[in-house]
Amino acid sequence: MASSSIFHHILFLKHPSLSDNSPVRSPLRFRSTIRATSSIALDPGLSTKNSPVSEVEFSCPICYEPLIRKGPSGFNLPAIYRSGFICNKCNKAYSSKDIYLDLTVTAGTKEYTESKPQGTELFRSPLVSFLYERGWRQNFNRSGFPGPDEEFKMAQEYFKPAEGGVLVDVSCGSGLFSRKFAKSGTYARVVALDFSENMLRQCYDFIRSDDTILPTNLALVRADVSRLPFSSGSVDAVHAGAALHCWPSPSNAVAEINRILRSGGVFVGTTFLRYTSSTPAIVRSLRGRVLQNYTYLTEEEIEDLCTSCGLINYSSKVRQAFIMFSVQKP
Ligand SMILES: C[S@@+](CC[C@H](N)C(=O)[O-])C[C@H]1O[C@@H](n2cnc3c(N)ncnc32)[C@H](O)[C@@H]1O
Image (cartoon, rainbow, N blue to C red; front, side, top):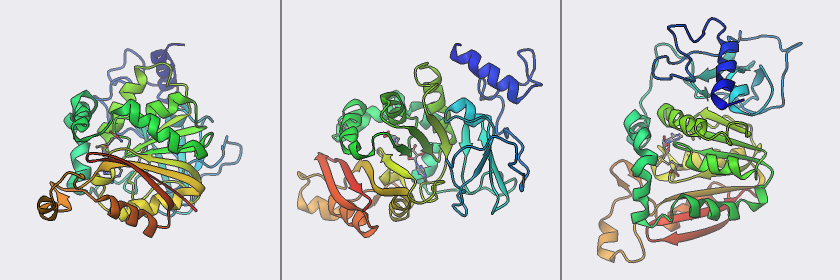
């Protein structure tokens, strides 16, 4: 079945009142006209007796207890979109909004909203999200980034101990690496995770235009890197491309990544260094760590941060201001 008809089928099942003649269009097909529809209404305290409940996949971002899933099984976009998730401890339900599963602490709030620091907020913009893979990311090459194909190859080398496991692409943006990880067939499951609703929409659009990715074991999740919705020790690999400098608190983020990794699990990140080996000493001392709301670290600071969070076997590759580093959970 073609991808568009699979989704039409799914949506029809999920919202039986919607048809092609309906004035209300499906969020999967026309996301700009309808927003924030909760998928399956899950009553807190709902009994899971007689319902298909699959193995633990996600955890509550508030208490980290595993979420109970109700809905079709399968770790792919259509099945997850049609599923509801509930934390029996917090009495809170989580479901898919548009095309991603919202696992932020504020999911479902009606009055309360929250602004994050600029490094997070900038990427929530629809324009920045649209431009990201259409020119913005290519600019990184000028700072030494080798480009997605080469960065993917380099990351895959580091991720050898995690083959066959669960990979979370934290701060995936529009999913340029999540798609590569999913297509590689190297992992049992890939989670493309970002805080930006619009980046996740872009990510979905790119996935939809590639029929080979739709049926893969890939989920789109909205979450904050400082509050990752996974149980401790449940993840084999964490990738964070060009992201550390955007995070509100790199230390909270790395501590959280350490928490979700299993023993032997691997974290690979890339970022911009504060200065390169050719930056004159006088300029180095003048260059602030926080520049235009981004946190630029030195290589020594990155290694120190990772080891102080309990990660080991630090290794890195540097090219101008580009660094790819890898660490492991003991
Ligand atoms: C420069 S983009 C990187 C995208 C992609 N990984 C890449 O390699 O090109 C940085 C991403 O970090 C995300 N981000 C910023 N703050 C975040 C947070 N608190 N939690 C999760 N993601 C965050 C942004 O939404 C954005 O998509």
